[in-house]
Amino acid sequence: MFANRFPAAKRPLLIRGARPVGFGAGNGDALDVMVEKHGRIAEIGSMIAAGEDTQIVEAKGAFLSPGWTDLHVHVWYGGTDISLRPQQCGAARGVTTMVDAGSAGEANFHGFREFIIEPAQENIYAFLNIGSIGLVACNRVSELIDMRSIDIDRTIAAVEANRDVIVGLKVRASHVITGGWDLTPVRLAKKFSRILKLPIMVHVGEPPPLYDDILPLLSEGDIVTHCFNGKAGGSILEDEDLYRLAEDAAARGIVLDVGHGGASFSFDVAKAALERGLPPKTISTDLHNRSLDGSVWDMATTMSKLLSLGMKFEDVVAASTTAPRRAIGLAANGLLEKGKPAEFTLFDLVDADITVRDSQGATSTLHRIFEPRHAILGAEAVKAHRHVPAEGAASDGHVCPHCGWKT
Image 1: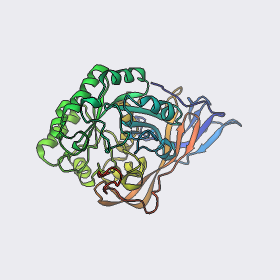
Image 2: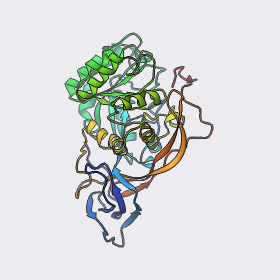
Image 3: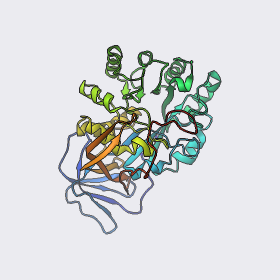
């Protein structure tokens, strides 16, 4: 995998007076970080002198964390009917690394790589959809109708040719996708996983298959996204047996990922799970063009929701930075050391009253908000801020006039 794909900047960058958080040693005193023009950390300390050609970002006590990493987005813009441009949910929102969750399958991954991944300012990785066409016409044309939808040889070949950016496999386990095919797509994804030695990300939606049957098939490192959905038949809190299965899965090293989305996050489920000691391992948005201006908005707002429901500040930061990096096999230790690639998010935690919704339409008022200020990509400091939804944007939970499914 590419460890530092950011191009050399014209000038070094000095971040002055930032408070580190999420680097493994607790919150520290304010410090300066000098990044040389090729994007690596040159010096860490206090009162670092800046040369005449040095760019300076005055942090003024803002937090500096490892770069926010969104484990579940859809950014195959133009290749699917739901994807956003990377710019809509990336550096301008404080996110330095994004992982596309199955927008592309083997038949169109080459286009996704050439036209989206390689030109992007941010780091973009991907879970390859086991359905050959991916999400070209999401929910209108299923990527998993039957075995004609999957080409085993070509899927394996696509992974082998793109191991620097393909970090796992994606399977959507929901009757609106697979009809009566039930567990077979998940079993096939696990077969790919064993052959390729990569994790799978499972979208759990409306049954069948049942959550109860999916969890025992997964192994350490696999990811269950939409872990706090409130769908009938798909909530981990709908009965005690399923809740115990979810606890066991987390104990076995299965990653519980938020994957908010337009239909897959419930305040009530998340709050109850947190109160019972079952937090998400990773926080992600499932941003796409049907959730951006609905309930999700951006990474900062999603992080703020988990904070409001009882997650500790440091745990929210970890679940949005180092935990997703570990989930896809990226380095997560020593990220604030001399010689390491500079990939940070500079942000404030501000007091504000903002009314937000979950995917079921329930509202809540947030009082403390993550507010990104800069995404640091090598020696480039990209100004960032939270997404402001378009005025009059349609609410989530409606039936999409184009595909007929709840979005």
